[in-house]
Amino acid sequence: MYIYKEKDYAGVSRRAANILSAQIISKPDSILGLATGSSPIGAYKQLVESYQNGDLDFTKVRSFNLDEYRGLADDNSNSYHFFMNQNLFAHINMKPENVHLPNGMAEDIEKECSDYDELIQELGGIDIQLLGLGHNGHIGFNEPDEAFITGTHLVKLTQKTIEANSRLFSRLEDVPREALTMGIKSIMLSKRILIIVSGEDKAEAVKNMLLGPVTPKVPASILQLHPNVILVADEDALKYIPANF
Ligand code: GLP
Image (cartoon, rainbow, N blue to C red):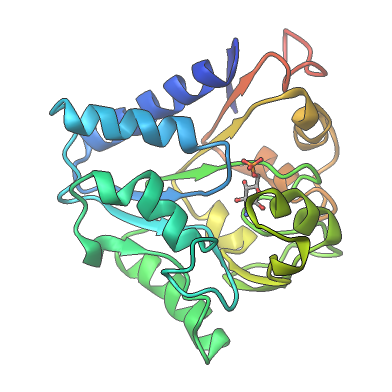
């Protein structure tokens, strides 16, 4: 794992956007795995600026998002579809047919999940998967569990995640209790993983991810076993990680 230690969130965003830009420039038909949450917003902003400056072209890029709430339609302002349109897709030249998110409204959830994983592999697999990190060590919506769940699947959100994500909803009751998420296997099959973390409130999760045992109780700890991971984090998030790590 390669670690970039940045001063603050702005530094994390800049570094992450530069890594994603390098990927797109060196392989214009890249398959990107994308994430939601507050962590990637700054990086998406820089990608939009680079597109507007003429430095990036997304016409051949394809994307697969990590997760989506169950029961929220694309145009619901709390859905991850909506988030992605607002923060990235509406401002760049990606073709709509090249954008993929799990369909939270699908009736046959099992089919939706297996089709999602199959399509990723059919197209050649994800070149770089962007990840945020949950306070309890979750990645995507892979919550702490007794076993690593493999492919894309339906998950019940923990109370901690519901509460953390409620800041984006008007009321706690409005946060969906379930979501579709890429599983640990779907994530681990990505050729490269870029995980971005900012803030002291994530320091414990970073410590558990890097220094703790590989365990499904800390889903992100599995990244210790991936051969090509880049962690971009700020000083606050890295406060428990020794400088020589
Ligand atoms: C959510 C998302 C994750 C995200 C995590 C951290 O639950 N499903 O993909 O990485 O929370 O979010 P944030 O970046 O807002 O701290």
